Amino acid sequence: MSSEKRLFALSLTTLAAAVASATAHAGTVTSDGQDLVIKTKGGLEVGTVDKTFTFKVGGRLQLDYDVYEDVFHKSGVGADADNIAYTGSADSLYFRRSFLEFSGTVNTDWKYVMNLAIDTDKSTAIWDEAHIDYVGFAPVTIKLGKYEADFGLEHATSSKWITAIERSMVLDVGGWQTAKQYGGQVSATGGMLYGSLGLFQNDDSLAHDGKHSYAYVARAVIAPINEAGRVLHFGLDYAHRNNRETSQSVKTSMAVKKADAITLGTNETAKEDDVFMIEAAYAMGPLSAQAEYINRNLDGGNDGDLESAEGYNVQVAYTLTGEARGYKLDGGKFDAVKPAGARGAYEVFYRFDNASGEVKAATGNPEATVHTVGMNWYANENVKVALNYLMSATDNVVSDSAKAAGSKDDGNAISARLQYAF
Image 1 (cartoon, helix red, strand yellow):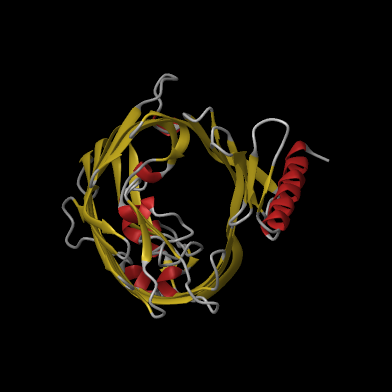
Image 2 (cartoon, rainbow, N blue to C red):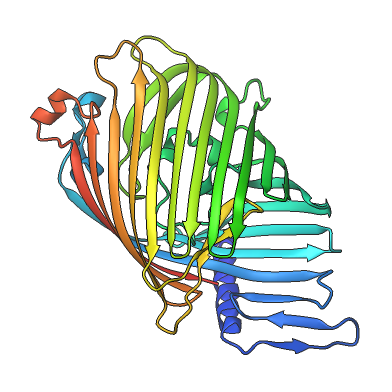
């Protein structure tokens, strides 16, 4: 058996043990040394009574099914890129995420996170995220390792608890600033404020003579209202990197993971790369609303190249059973909807996404919009069932020659998800 398959088998065994432990009754175990506490609500956690040392196993399984058509589906490629035909339909059943999550505390001031991503199609597993945090300078946290940069409200919120099945497509406008990267970050929370500043190593494609370039990402959040069932949130984000005159594209699958990406523009010799974002949210009881605006500027390029891109989203959600969304100022993010009744919590929502590019010397700039309506059923604190319906439209994305071949500039999709998080 290969090492990859042995690792995959070990991962599944560990996952099965964690799930079995989560069904046990909670309790306290004492030892010859310091007392230990075992928690089984939402995973398996073992730690000393004073929390000097802790170890937790958690994870998530997200099984998705998508049905999509026309502009979501690339049915053929002609002699050149302009003759791509977006037409026909397709469907996909797949595990969107299969994660095992390990975290803990060492000597009170040191924390760690290690996430194992399991590819169920290839029967392999990789360490998707791993970092060490120092919290001895409270309220300051220093983080080192590989992880996603802190950028935007929608991105900061865990994939387990975002309202729609997929995050807003406006995050595709930037893309690089939210990818998992090696680096360090300093963050702090105090009063109504939260902020972070990170320095990250760019991917190998931007390396020169074996030397990597670096990017920095900054975020500032203020929550003048932050109490149970009521939140007012504002945030500003900025990211910068040097592209070393490489080709950079803005592509989006319009919030359907397996759909084919459309291109909003390409800059063949991009130099400086700047991404800005504004975020805002308000929640009162079962009602929540949030919005984000993003702008990306690419320095360099020639006529016909992408000069800038922008996007925005607006989302409104309402919990029919009355529960409020959780919120954490530390991290500036929304958290889970925790059902109050035995039958769970029901949530409905609507989101509008718009993304566009500005192309030098172009007669018409590319643009894409998506309307998403959906419902979430939080059966309990571990199981979530989601159903989304998406309606899309594009302009100046599909060429006239492609349209003559039957290509479409709009389309619909249905996405469903069964999630188990522990």
